[in-house]
Image (cartoon, rainbow, N blue to C red):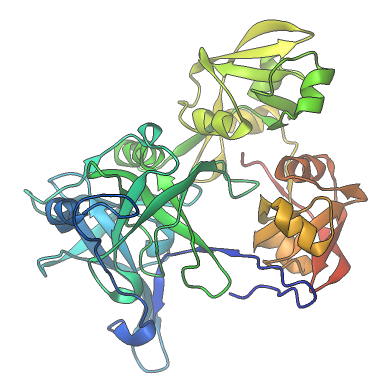
Amino acid sequence: MTTSKNRNRGLIVGVAVAVAGAYLVGHERARADEDSSAKTTLSSPAAGNNQAPNFSAIVAKYGPAVVHVEARSDEQTSDGGHSGALGTGFIVSQDGYILTNNHVVEGAARVTIKLSDGRKFPAQVIGTDKEGDVAVLKIAGSGFPTVKIGNPADSHVGDWVVAIGSPYGLDNTVTSGIISAKSRTMSEDNPMPFIQTDVPVNPGNSGGPLFNLNGEVIGINSMIYSRTGGFQGLSFAIPIDEAMHIKDQIVGSGHASHARLGVAVQALDSSTASQLGLNSTHGALVAQVEDGSPAQAAGVQQGDVIVALNGQEIATPAELRARVSHLESGANTKLTVLRDGAKRTLTLAASGDAAGNAAPQTRAQSETPRPRLGVAVRQLSDDEAAQIGVDGGVLVARASGPAAAAGVSPGDVILAVNGVEVSNVEQLQQTIADARGKVSIVVYRDGQQLTLKAQLANTREG
């Protein structure tokens, strides 16, 4: 995967690679010489000033529960081998349930698990969730070593974290770093609140555990930002509570369902908050309510500010999306909104989807599809915007579907859609939500502005 280079101003931009992930292979064995930098150096003892803590106790106790995942397809390569991917997973129960990323095992005909003691087991894929990028595997047996599950809410930016995985097929590689940010939303379609770290992860690390200093798993390493395909300082993990919620659904019913309200929301800035008579920017501003959605049926209106869900305060749109993703489809949900300076509590039943399909009740209520561009984007930093001489814009991390067909590429900066300047992720989401048919997209690439035409796809997912 490549990115554009700003030859005139030297802007360095990254590409989301779903990763860290599966190390694609076309032979029976991974080549260990693919990356001579994939080495592990554990820190010196005892945390002191400017020193990392000693992670050896964590590795000794929980390392045996981290497994190597080998996924093979039936497709043959030119040299007679079988194509596939290598990744990482970890055992969450003594009877052999394993978590990894969906993109590690997607399309695999056979999955093999190798433990740190060298034992190998054929694995059954119990179920996968593409939207959450989580897969649940099972190996036969009992008494397997397991990890300890933690609570990502108890972690803080700046905390030390540790990853164990198989970068480039190098099993049981240990790397460390800190939590750089929390609740990073990477896609217009996926509300996953990623944990951002600077832990070195590379292809083959995908699906591996991210530990805190208590030895508890708080995330699944899933993506990196990179211009080269290798680690460049930005890695992203799925919070373990999100992954375990998906796992419980898959084990219970064979699939995961993602609840939805049927609203498009955006962050409140100080100017908008002031116009609405609010003294805080906490909450999620409703920019659009889908026809026939649970939100519309409950009376949610454009311009409402959602401030609480089931009595729990909502500070940001990302927090709202994360909370909604944990709702059970059809369960009564209380939504607290601010409207005309007063609080109102509305009751609705969030709809859901199974295996990526819209729920039957949603289809019956509304056949109006939602337009989709097919990009994962992030906000430009002030320094990046200054380097290319723009006031706003969003950086394309991944392009698929209509965007890719129109020529949008990772590394492009989207400046405007249909003549409307795009200054942040929420504004792009809203502009696309309001659009129909073809859209005109102005992007910045290699020192030039280009205008691309895209035919929006329609989807009922949400």
